[in-house]
Image (cartoon, rainbow, N blue to C red; front, side, top):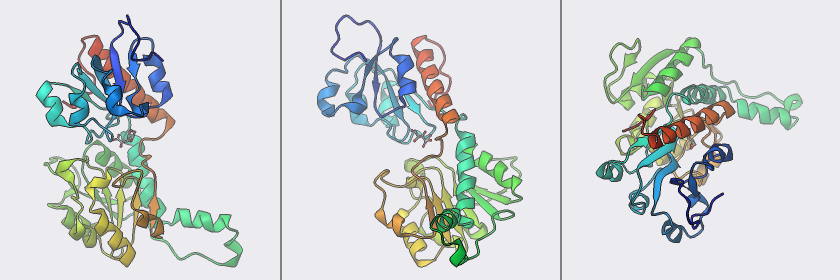
Length: 320
Ligand code: 8YV
C-alpha cells in the first residue's frame, strides 16, 4: 500500500478512519493514495501527513468527529460503511458543505432478520438449551418452559426501513404490530402509539430499530422499560444509546422485565460487565449487518459513492 510520504503520486488521497474489510480496501489501491489512519499508533502525528486527503471512509458508528474533520482541510466527502451516521459531526460537515453518504437498504433485511432471531432466541431460551445439550445434561433434567413468540404483540420503536422490514417478518409469525415513530407514518396498517412508554405497555416485545444520535438518546427510558412489565421483552438492533442502559440492567436484574435480546450496547466493545451476569439475556457483538452478502454489498455501495464523487456524478446514497 502506498505510504503517505510518497512523492509525485497524483492519485487522490483518501483516509480510512476505522478498520474496514480488506476486500473493500484492495479495489481502491490502484486509484487512490490511501492513508491508514485506523492503523496509525500516533494519530495526531499521522494527521500532519493527511492535509491533501479529499475523502474519508469510516463507519457510521465510529463516524468522524469535529477534530478529525478540522484536521483534513482538503476533505470533500465522508463515506460511511453502515446505515447509521450517529458518529458523524454534522455541524462540522455542514459548515464546510461536506456531503456524507451511508449504505441504506442493502443491510435492511439482515438487521430485521436478526431482530426476529433475537426475539426468538431470548423467548425460546435457545442459547441456554444449546448449552444444556452440549453439557450432556439432557439425560439429567428438563429446562423451564419458554415463552411463545408467534402471535405476540410486537412494538416497533422507529418505523424506518428496518422497522418496516421487521414488522413484515413479525406479521409472518402472526404477530400484531404497533409502533412509535417520531414523525407521522400515514397509511401504515399498524397501530401508532404516542410514546415509547404507551407502546411498551401494550407490547409483549419492543424491538428498537430507530437511528442513534442525540435525538433518540435514552428514548427507551426507565418508565418505558418498566412499562414492558415482568412478562415483556426488549430487543435492540439499533444503537445502545437509545436505551437507558442502567435502568435496563436494573430491570433485568430484578425481574421488572422478562428478558432482552441485544446486539448493541453503550461503549462497544467494552460493554457493562453486568450484562454477562444476566441469565435472561441473549447478547451479540453488534452483528446486525454481518453476513457475507450484506457486508459485500455495503462495501460496493461505499465504493460506488466514492467513485461517483470523484467522477463528478450524483451520489448514490447521500445522507445530506
Ligand atoms: C455497521 C451498523 O454496518 O449500519 C450500521 O449502522 O450499525 C452496522 O450494521 C457495522 O457496525 C459495520 O460498521
